[in-house]
Amino acid sequence: MKNKVVVITGASSGIGKALAFTFARHGSSVFLGARSGDKLKEIVSEIEADGGKAAFFTMDVALENDCKNFILNAKETFGKIDVLINNAGISMRALFADTTPDVLKRVMDVNFWGTVYCTKYALPFLLETKGSVVAVSSVAGIKGLPGRTGYSASKFAIHGFMESLRIENMKTGLHVMMAYPGFTASNIRNTALVADGSEQGKSPLDEGKIMSAEEVAAHIYQSVKKRKTSMVLTTQGKLTVFLSKFFSGFLDKLVYRHMAKEPDSPFK
Image (cartoon, rainbow, N blue to C red; front, side, top):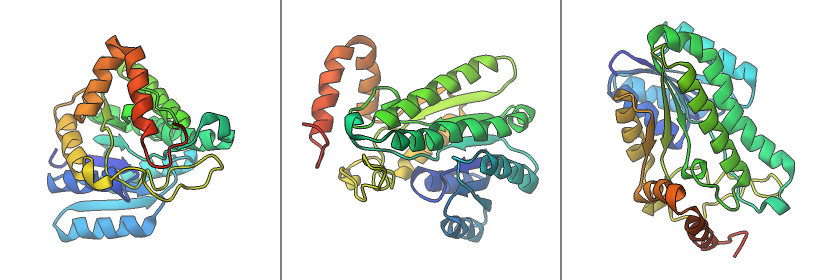
């Protein structure tokens, strides 16, 4: 990946931040996007201090014009785009019966439409380089999770979009990859929306006992390098894929029991 230009959304924390450092350490130039310009500036400074090449653009993936300007600035800054990683995301945690529709719309705007917008404007440049477009999904994009209707819906939508995009470009040289990390230590659960649209403020999981963002980034790096079409991490994630194919009813019960054990679960 040396001398490749890698564009990453949601790069101010978690997996996105880890991806920025991982690709930069391997000689890629990274162009980072997120809403927090201050955090992005710090990350770019650290990468440059370590001898890497990086730049950033403050943007909100839910806004089409922001995505367009983000991609165009990446191309203008580094002259090309080899990899686009659609990582920006937001979660939610509440029963559908209690949730206002605007919560689901917000999740869809960020997760699904953010992926669509950035991919749309980056596609001409990626076709020039026969590059890669990656979407960071979740186990919730393999199996619908209770209490996460909007989140699962957005991830399933991304899967359909990316799969169609892959087939459309079978003869263009474009590499299309879905990444399913499983539960990862990040800020996404702290900022997850509850039924009224406010942030829940704390994670229901023990973040120290789940896969680190750095581990996920290392796996994504290797998968992009090998141009894989799909990447599923953690034993739990791989088991979910297997059971969803052959024992879907049994998996429904397992998922319900597992998610019901979370602290302050919206259902029992």
